[in-house]
Amino acid sequence: MARGAFPEHTGCLDWLTALDPYRRRTDAEHYLEGLRKAGFE
Image (tube, rainbow, N blue to C red):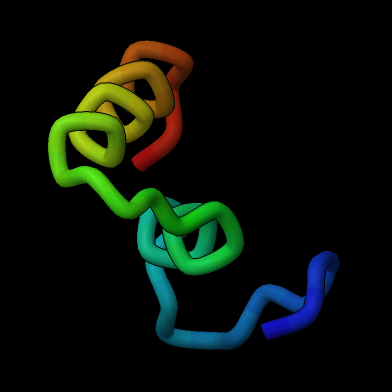
């Protein structure tokens, strides 16, 4: 998935986590928590 291309029917958090995947689950959860606090859904 290319940066700047936001596919229809894809949630913002799903799109962001696909662009910036984390190997460790705890890191991914921390990243998602920060995005939610910033107002992303």
